[in-house]
Length: 258
Image 1 (cartoon, one colour):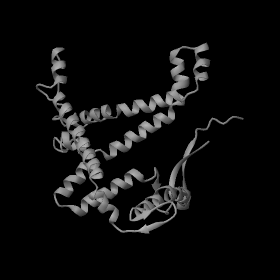
Image 2 (cartoon, helix red, strand yellow; image 1 turned 180 degrees about the horizontal axis):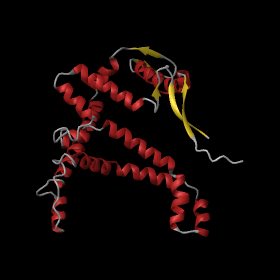
Image 3 (cartoon, rainbow, N blue to C red; image 1 turned 90 degrees about the vertical axis):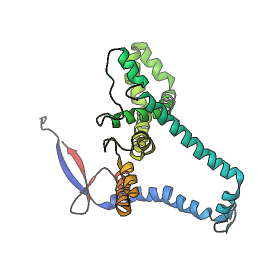
Image 4 (cartoon, rainbow, N blue to C red; image 1 turned 180 degrees about the vertical axis):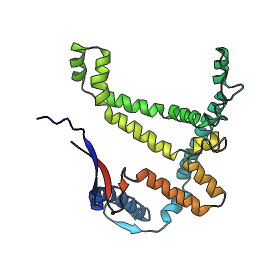
């Protein structure tokens, strides 16, 4: 007899040692290389030997005109691109003379104050951020599509059209590229500060404040301990697993049972 019972969700507790394999991988491939990199930065080394020289490498770096010039050019380039981007989009979104509202008025529509309206400020900055990441997302998707074997497309074209090609070939076989774009966008959004601070300073009021801008304001106001605590909470928010801690000391996940 086939049961028509609906799946039920229960909570199953897993001990924390289930995370040991992930912790080992993280330690081997991140913590250990980082520590070794820091150590070797204090040495003069080759493939066969390493001699501890302290901070001499940093002194060489600061005294080498090519290295300092490269660092200076990197900083200048980053600042110029950020400033230019902010100026361009702030001008485009200017409520009275901006290009966006000017175009809207030509169609008989009243354009809003994109950065001054508390209900629109955060979404307006998000649109700029989306535009900024559109290039790398396009490159990732193009690479994902080019990696699909051509025989898949040939097989679909024999029996179906373009929509079926997209639905049954491109969409499922580019899921890794889609996941990569979503993950990079999510991490970038959690760390976003320069764009928000340059365009609205978290305003109007607190309408476009994010965690990084709140931490910056608290630190500037002298609440150093509070800003450090918020920084720690932000790091935990980014790196913590998607689970909930139980009072018994384990971690719980929703398990679907038939």
